[in-house]
Length: 376
Ligand SMILES: Nc1nc2c(ncn2[C@@H]2O[C@H](COP(=O)(O)OP(=O)(O)OP(=O)(O)O)[C@@H](O)[C@H]2O)c(=O)[nH]1
Ligand SMILES: [Mg+2]
Image 1 (spheres, rainbow, N blue to C red):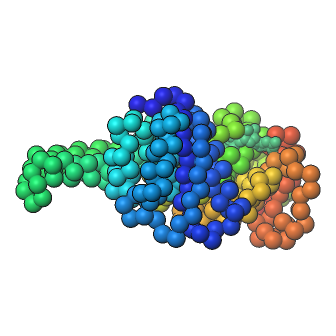
Image 2: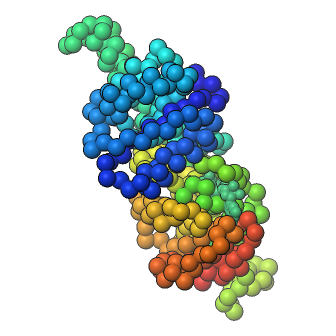
Image 3: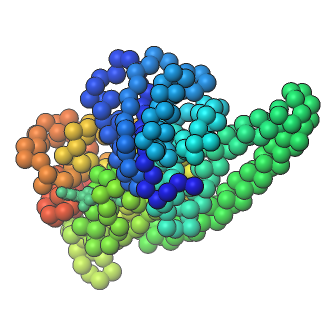
């Protein structure tokens, strides 16, 4: 068991020619993830390598160095910023198990944060599902090792039966979780159908984690979503009604007010290298986004990696099959940056009708509302 504030070593294996600023951003993000988890980062290592090592990803020489350092620094956790094959994690874990050091890859790290932050039943189920999919093969590997020790290769030893039991157990769990998620998804679906009948339009807030999505929802609707300077603060979906003052003469609501309402949803943030199986596990949370008529893509305009993050989010949206949904780019945190190249951004992202806001100060919100109305 890890302590609540584990000392950690971070390693990132990158291609030899990756630009320094990109390399720095990667390790900085892992550092942020580790701190969000509660870890204390002791050492950060960036290793340039043409190809990952087949057995250990990091390479045995580097690994021995890291392990020696970990022991000297009383480290409990080694985090590798890449997506490892089950046997690679397994091989590293074997080397450090006696020293009580845990080894996580990037997906483990994200899943652990998710686990800590999950509050709804749905989010918890989705994380368990993602966990089974990610960790499952590692567990089989362990079973395989046992079987070879027990009976030698080719014989049906004790361990092999164990693998089968574990496999069956995991498959059963996966099925049961999927069933439960399906029920929740059906409930969502019923809600959405009812909304459709009421003729309510939907807009979904998406964006890189920590861009200010929940802050924007709160600023627009006073919903009271959880806001924090940490990654993946939000893991569920929150829906709130937003009143849009009228543009067209003929749009009156049931109270005779001129204008329309839109249902606005805030959800889980995206991050670089979000593996498809994780996105898949969160599909039911993301259903609001998938069904939305308009996507508000929130961007932290003060982030030096803004453009890269826009790309990452677009990639994930495409994976979700909503690449073609109309989008508004909401450049947020304008209060943090003195010189914002508004004209250039407006030109570059013309099709996304860029809007500049500060969710914190409440500026630009009227402009955003007008844009939402016209784009719907
Ligand atoms: N200065 C400034 N800070 C902001 C603004 N909007 C949000 N923040 C801060 O940015 C941090 C992240 O805000 P959230 O609203 O939790 O971001 P999120 O996109 O919902 O993040 P996740 O749910 O973790 O993906 C918080 O510390 C907010 O106070 C803004 O317009 N200006
Ligand atoms: Mg949030």
